[in-house]
Image (cartoon, rainbow, N blue to C red; front, side):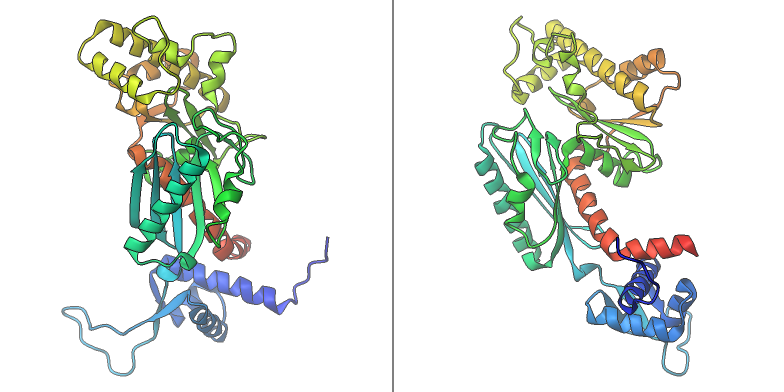
Length: 388
């Protein structure tokens, strides 16, 4: 390891730039005096840093405005004000699911500026599915007037166990997905980092950012489908596990619990076709209409789901469990889940439904991209601030 020294002027400039940029982002607009006070740096240093950030396109000077009603214009030249240019770069959040792909576009503040989605056949090959993603991204960028070169990072949420390099190690939900070098394939379409995340993990991040878990740092998000998965945050940080397989509760029935979800939801004695969401939706609809066999099937499904969630809660002791996916639309899923967790858990967590719905995965993928960019722009600022 190379020796660290305090005399590297390049490193010092990076630290000062990160500190000023972080202060400016939090302030909205600020004068040089404001930034000097907020950062503890000298005024000449702040002025030099701001000019450099303007040259980099990350900061803009705000034109002097008219005084607010009831105020008089002060004599003399007004102080220069500056703002962080959220439009200096853009981010994408992409969901790749069994039946659809979806895209969210934002500036560097995470504010949504473009959206799009399109249906994809369950039987589509990996190449066909990726082509739909590329076409949708191009459409969203074109409609929003954003150049592809403006993209700073792309986050992707997908079913399966995802390795650090974006390779899908195992996936039963999408044809041809197991072993797919998804990150590598998508990086060919972008000149920026592409970060691939499991869909339930991405949804957990989304609920913590903008959903039902904004006030909790220890959460479990359950993405309930025929093969339910879960994402968890511990102390506000995503928990992936050693091999990226944390939260794969859909595999619990393999441990001596032979009945598959397709068998549990059957009303005929024959299992439903694997991963046939339309067939499952019909069972749910029949149950809502009062069909007794369908209601019994849904009850069996809910019972399995709550047992699987209880196992995860016992291991992690979260403050909150958020339920999304199909189960978020099931009547009566929360009460059985609360009852089951009360029976088995020493301290039952709160239970809530997702408020993001089908947007959860793409929203979480966008947050993953935003985290990556913020780390590069503001990580040094955070380190310096903590040490003051």
